[in-house]
Structure formats: C-alpha cells, structure tokens
Image (cartoon, rainbow, N blue to C red; front, side, top):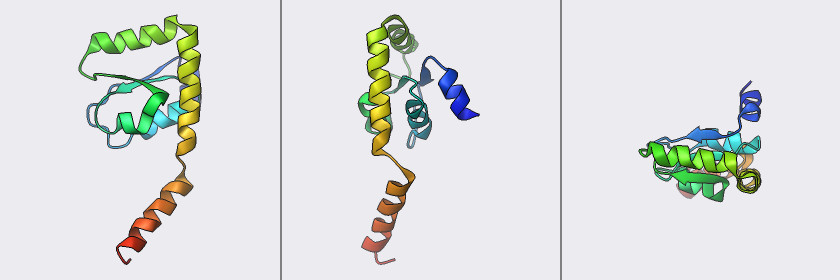
Length: 108
C-alpha cells in the first residue's frame, strides 16, 4: 500500500528535524516521486542530489520548494531522475554486507 501512496503523490515532503536515516525518503525516490526533505540530520547524506533540501523550520522555504517542483516540469523530471539514480546506491544486501564487515572488524 505504501508503494501505491508514493506513486500517487506528486511530491513527498519530509521536513524532519531528527531523522536517523531517511528510509521513507528513499522509498519515495524509488517510486519516482520527487522528494523535499531537511538539510539537517542524516538527510543530506542519504538523499544527496536525489532530493530538494530545505530548512525544516522554515515553512516558506518548504512551500517554495514544493511550488518550484510543481511549477517547473524540467526541475520535476530532473529531481525524479536524480532520486531514481540515488536509490541505486542503497540495498538491503549492501547493508547486510557492511554490517557483517563491522562485526568482523571487531572480532565477532
């Protein structure tokens, strides 16, 4: 059902102040939905160029980012494509392999 909701959305907005990773933003990107998210916490590192980054405390900036995406078809498509490319850098397999590497490095 989440996939259906992401696909139905024009833009996914996630102005979180304390996001530990940003999995939901990646899920939206994987569905081809442009993302507007925070320029704080883990989001810049996770989202990269796959999202429009905004100050999560600035409602005007958040609204402006959404409006730009909806009013500019070229920007919309560019962000959609960036998001689809960005999610290719993440996978559960890669996560498991990196976790195993950490365990091995500490002798577990």
